[in-house]
Length: 187
Ligand code: IMP
Ligand code: MG
Image (tube, rainbow, N blue to C red; front, top):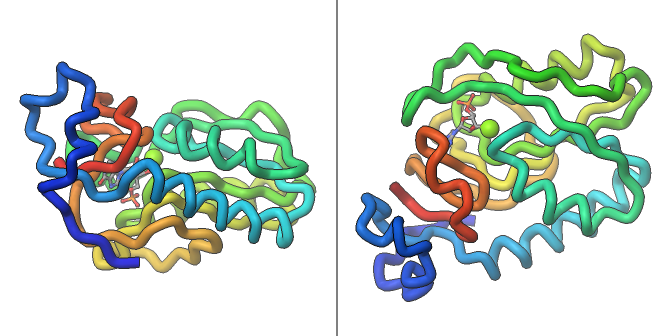
């Protein structure tokens, strides 16, 4: 799904007051569109992975994961924390800040990620899961920017394909700011 920025979108008015004068350019994906897409993906995941062990990549995927996980019929979840971006730049060297608590050995792991950009972070996480003996590893990502890809990674469940834009909201940040905005906007 290809999306464009709609600067006339009135839902921008629902921004928290402190963000109204900030540099947000416009809404890219409305909350209702996100909800509908997560419901669709959840139907597929419920069919494909009846016993998923969700691995939530903090902090960006937290909001996506909390909406997704509650639509899954039978799953467990844990989190790990990876730092890959400095401001608007990908470091290309993802750093693990927190390991998952539950051992991944023998699990059907479903990685829940906010956005796949160059692919370096996801590749690092997939390798991490395989190295720790996961039985299978699948990926659900809310957003993907394929035009920025440097490493080929397969996204099994992708919410939205977007252009090369820096986006915030619904968990995504710019230097830890804007995560609490309930929709995806362009900075
Ligand atoms: P990659 O390693 O280049 O694929 O970067 C993936 C990570 O960078 C994501 O998990 C995000 O945390 C962050 N990221 C990439 N693009 C954006 C963006 O447009 N907004 C906010 N964070 C982003
Ligand atoms: Mg992330």
